[in-house]
Length: 327
Image (cartoon, rainbow, N blue to C red; front, side):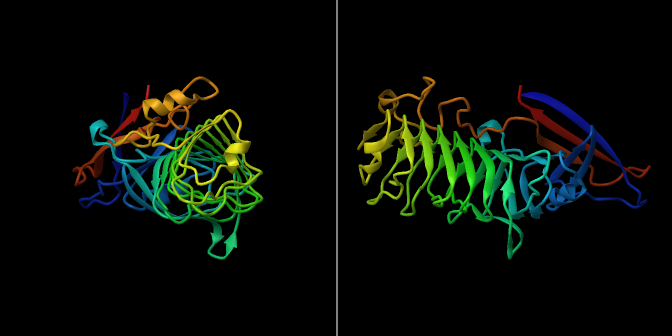
């Protein structure tokens, strides 16, 4: 990791001693200039001040925001904690996303954990569609459904962990090197999975989907994704409740044994790896392909910040921020 150091000295207008919160910080980069916000609402404040194309970088911690309505880039400190590598996650409690489809730049969100359902709405009664968004290295913890409301149009997930995927009709979504635990798709959707690991399937159907270089695990009695419109190519399947989909699958392998190493995050056993490889010769599933799943954050992230508890005699507040960037 290459260390970049940003030392900020903020002028304080008030003559009295000033205290700043130390547990959250958001920086807003606009055309080379940087502004800094503090506290649990710092993401919301940075978003309010941002314009399309700006970059918001968050330290670890929990952030509250009611709606993301601007096509900005938001980069957190990590999608999960890792004490060994000194990574502490950034968690966002998010109610709504509503981005105008005519924006010139896409919404980009990276290295963040989302708690709960995300609503694609202007307000609780007005659904909209989310166009041209990219989520990278994010965790979506909702166990009911990840997105509610409008359709996802040309939305991509890369190296993400999703508890449950769900798609409104007319959605057009791509998953690349993702871990997906359960979910369903609507009958009028177009959803593709490339080098993904789907750990279990519920009773709701996966329709109109393309699975390529995927690991498809099935442990329940009924197979909810045996729709004839699905394409399954070069996949590894295990514990199926039905053989229908595998009769139409191409270049795929079906087994009835455990395929994951005990004590790992869905890593394949050596025996399972030997059964089939991805089209590019790498490992099948989320740990293979061009973007192997890796929850460790990359790109710039705030790793340390120290704020003086009081302003100096000349009414200035010393702020020391350390930003790490991958090589």
